[in-house]
Each structure stands twice: as structure tokens, then as C-alpha cells.
Image 1 (tube, rainbow, N blue to C red):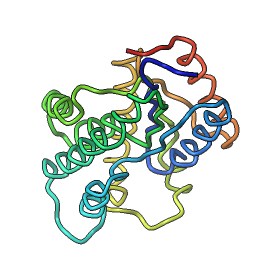
Image 2 (tube, rainbow, N blue to C red):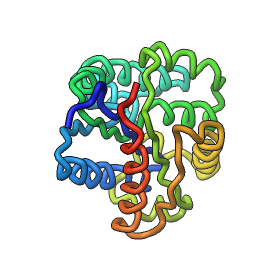
Image 3 (tube, rainbow, N blue to C red):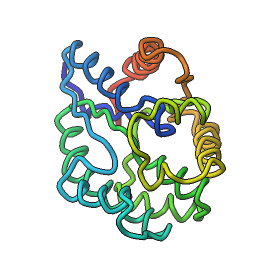
Length: 211
């Protein structure tokens, strides 16, 4: 199968929602259908992005909130330039673990930075590229914390009120952009959630090619 432009899919949500696992499963399923898939994550997936990931997520250096947002965006800009746009131009399918929505939610809705300013800088970072479909994996905070099987990073260490604002921010953005953002119940089994994801992706695949 060939396409005028590849498909850009993103999974997002609270840490512990199962994004990374579901991204891998989705990529495997798409490859089984004969698609060429590029799997990536934010922040990271480029040499610069990995360095910025260490700065922004580890506990070694204090990072103020505006700097935090800009570091995420710098990583995203490099990811778009090095990985996402070239792959889309070749007709590949991108499956990305987080994208611009995370900055809007974590540093905007939860952190208090101006949402419109974040969106404007975000458009600069991405060249106005956005996913064709973002699936938000939603579940209660206590369940997300219980699923996390590693030490908390700098953002994950923030208090419960912050993470509740994160969850509410995802839901608010999905309500604002129902054409691009869908919320899925991530409290079910891994297999059941993957089924929901595949149903949404199948729906979007049926509307191609994408501009």
C-alpha cells in the first residue's frame, strides 16, 4: 500500500496508563497489515531529544516551568525534523508516545502556563504538524500510580493535585478537539484497551489519504 502522506498516530495520558505498551502493540498490529511503521516517543527518539529528556525528567537540576515547557518543545522540534516528517513523506505510519498535547496539559492545564502561548510556541516547534489521531488513555490516579513499576521521575513526583489537573486537562482538550482527540478507558485489560485502540485507528484508516 502507498499513500500520499503517511498516517500520524499518538497515544497520550497519565504516566502509568499503559501508553508505551499500547504503542508497541499498535505498531506490531499495523506492521502485520503490511504498513511500514516508525515508533517514537517524547521527549527523546533523537540524539538531542535523549539529552533533553535526561535534563527535564531527572532530578539533577532545578528546571523552572517555562524552561521545562521549552525543553519539551525543543525535543519535539528535533523529532519532527529528524524522524516524523521524513517518515510521513515516505508514506510511513508514525506511532508516537506523547506529542504536543502533553505540553499543553502538563505545563499548561496542570502547571498554569498560558495555554494560548503554549499553542503558539508549539506550532513553531512542529511547523504546525499535528497527529491525525491522538488517543488519550484515561484512568483514575490511584490506578495509574499502582501500575508504575519504576522510580518516579521529576514530573511524576509532583503531588496528587497536580496529576488530577493533568487528567482533567486531557479530558478538557479532548472536549475541545473531538475531531482529533479521543478518550479511551484504560482501566481494562491490556488486550481490551488494544482492541479499543485498533477500532479507532481502523476508523481513521478508512478515511485516508491524509493531507
